Structure formats: C-alpha cells, structure tokens
Image 1 (cartoon, rainbow, N blue to C red):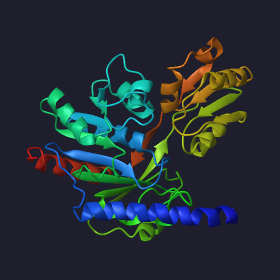
Image 2 (spheres, helix red, strand yellow; image 1 turned 180 degrees about the vertical axis):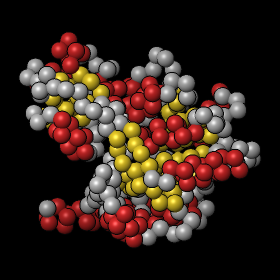
Image 3 (cartoon, one colour; image 1 turned 30 degrees about the vertical axis):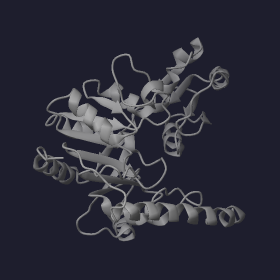
Amino acid sequence: MKWYNILSAPVAGIYGLASMVRNALYKGKVLQSHTVSVPTVCVGNLAVGGTGKTPFVEYLIRMLQQDYKVAVLSRGYKRRTRGFVLADATTTAMEIGDEPMQIHTKFPNIPVAVCKDRIEGIQRLQNLYSGLQVVILDDAFQYRRLKCGYYILLTAYDRLYMKDYFLPLGRLRDNRKESLRASAVVVTKCPDTMRPIDQRIVDTTLHLPSFQQLHFSKIIYPAVPEAKSILLVTGIANPEYLLEHVRKSCPSVSLMAFPDHHAFSVKDIQTISQAAEKVEMVLTTEKDYMRLMTCDLPKNLQTKIQALPITISLTDEDNLRRALHQYIKENLHIKQ
C-alpha cells in the first residue's frame, strides 16, 4: 500500500491542480456559469460514487411532488444514447442509464430526462412541461456551466470529504473547498447506533460555516426475503453495507461484485446463472436490476432474482423542507 501511495501521490497532485484551475476559471468568470428560469436543486458530491445520490433524489421527489411540478434531470451515465432523452413507458436503462431508469420506474408520473448539456436539458423540459416549478439535478455539482440555485452536497459517514484525497490516492474528484458552494451538507450512510457525540465529532471535522445546514441520513433496508442461501449480485461502488444487511438475515450469502454501473455481458449472465443454481435466491440492487432486466436472462435467474429497494431517513427533515420551500417560492418567477 505504501508503494501505491507513493506512485499515486503525484497523479493526485496533478488531478487536484487541474481541478483547482478549472474552478478558479469559473470563479474568475473566465469561464461562464449560466442560470435558468426555473428553480434548480442539485444533488452531488465531491467524491466518485458511493454516497447515495439516487436514494436522496428519490427522497426529494417524495418531499416536493405534492406541492410543486417536479422534474428530474441526469447526465445518464453509461447510457447508449446521445443528446436529450425523455423517459417514457418504453424506455430502458440502456437508453437513459440505470439510475434515471430506477427513478422513472418508481415515479412514472414525474418527468425524468437525461442530457449531457444540463442547460439544454432544463430548457427542453420547460418547453415540454409548461408550469414546471423545480428541476432536481442528479450529480451536477461539478457541472459549473450551470449555476444551480440550491446545492445539496452528500458525503459518506465512513469517508468524509475532509478526510479524503484526490484520485487516485483517494476518491475526491473536486477540491474540499468547493463544499462551500453547498447550501446543505448531508452525511449519508450513518450507522443505526450513531450517538449525539458522534454527530458532534462529524460537525467538528467538517467545520461548516453558519450559512450551511448539516444533516445526517441513514439507509433503511427492507426485510430480506427468507432463504437458506442467497447470491448477492452488485455493480455498485461499495456493496459492503448491503452485504452486511443481508448477512443478518441469511448466514449463507455469497457476493458477486462487479464494478459500479457495470454493463452485464452474455458471459457475466452465464456466470451469474451458474452460481444461481447453487442458491435458493438471487438478490441485487435496484439499479443493477434495471440493467439486468435488459439482458436475456435464463429461466433460473428470472425465477430467483429479486431487487432489494432502499429508502433513507434524515435528521432535521423539517429544516430542509422549509429551506427548499423558501428557495423555490422565492425563485419561481426568476428571469434568465
């Protein structure tokens, strides 16, 4: 590990310098940031993967959809299409990406679109949906061309951005100081046993300015279906949380882990199918399920595979709700 750190440090330094230069160009207005004429709420992070952005986007939809006309816009990571794509009844994960597909499946009445150019994406949504009142942007914290109105920064409890380093030495893809652009910081994946003193330690570590709200969230897993043996198939950044939860209900669990957003090949499906023959049940995450359902699955997988959905709970939920409602109401008729 020491040799890896020695080799990674110079690369991390170059990555960090490039990130700081880019941000400085936007702050100095050499590169321009643009606003749009609809309130925008950005959910993002400073690290690569593993902070729980998609469950939090779903959380915000549930919080806002009763009071506002909401749409969701994402880049559509690893999709096989280009340009602006609006999800409909025939859309697949290959066309919009696994996470937008997961959101569209859960909220079919909410417009969900993908577009690499977020400004164009928002304008297209506005043209398609008159009276649109708020757009939630998934993973747009580093998209500096768009100046969002309300930024929510996520950081995992076991890997706070203040204790992390630039890629490849750590997992940061942006400078820690960019956290100051956030209106609220949410510490995700907190343990169920978290005590007030643990929250104070995190608060001290992050040392947020007074204008930023600090929240803590935890994952809520559903009960694991009864089975004597389970194969857990994942293509996520960190499967350890899910693996630990499944093992609490089933002592015989085998993990087959693929890279984040992995595109399952025919060979992968064959490997999974062979392993499935030895177990009673196959479990996977919701976003992996979205991709697996686009594959030609053998019958043994079709009958055994299930997705395990997750939700989140948040401390001081009312404070975040009030802040978001205030921001949206004050900016419903802003001019571009």
